[in-house]
Image 1 (cartoon, one colour):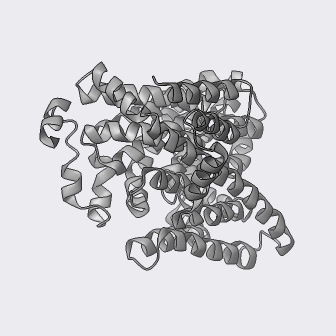
Image 2: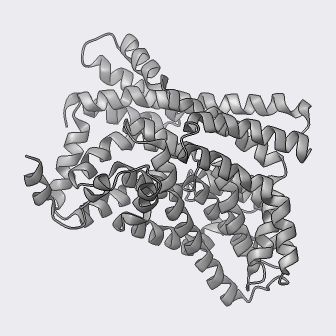
Length: 453
């Protein structure tokens, strides 16, 4: 490792160890690393930070954040819970399935895992406690199921990955996440069924067709947002950024004028929260842009690529190693900085394997979703424990089977590319010829190298 890379890594780890905010740690590590190369570091860092956030696609982030806040307070979660209850509540341990399905649907319209934990969990966890479900189980299922909303579009983190990767279509990412998100939700439901069988959880009363249609009617306007956003993008009516703005207008009208769950006097507070969250995300993106540039100067991506290829010529082993590294990183780093830092490091490696960039983006996000549920810095885990009024120590044991389910889904997503790439191809967001290049499971890396030189 050369001097620039060594300074970058050591300063970054030192700042994290003394609890410096990660955005500041990234910027300062880049500053000192650039300082060792000679040019004026203050000018260089500022230039890279400005260019990093100078992207039209990033305008979608504050819009989706604001619409997520509106959804959290606007009564959408309660209507989705009622609808999900009529669909799966009659199964043994039905409220576990209801919780999972609601989180999937709420994540689909909000794109926020933390919003799902607080909004869905705020109702479901007390209700499950009252019905005799174990408190730790209730928190575990809410925490893990909430992360499916980061895979099922729309998703802010997919926009961040598209910007970090440089040339990945946001619409393709949105379509690629649908089946992996559903797969992860189904795996979580399997664990819910296992707990229900072992602990003899009760089932809810089966709903009639009229009851299902009634709750669907109440939830229809909330669910219709999916049709507007995804349908508009696929039909080319508007871009992902424009879709985010339309989502705000639709959600604002729905929650203020139709549902009347939000008062006009509450909007300034929601706008302030949106501004604060957006500022944090943009600071992370700007700082990470500087770090990505200095990592390229220090030849870190090439070094990591050589190390991984030197470890094994087998793509299966290389991808397993990358997943293990990302699982470890996710335990200590939030999702946004992890995507910004590790995309430029691992993307060149998987390209050598012949992997499609969209497929790798879904693997990266699915992997880091697990980190949102793991101590010591799992954001969703902390929120879930707060809502459920319990401790991480008590919940962790119950979380283990759910971690196993999410990792099993991750392995399938990793080694079966069609789960991620089939829908983007069918909707025209990816060309079949691009997918056919993803032959990393068919040959060792030597064959790929011979074909590219």
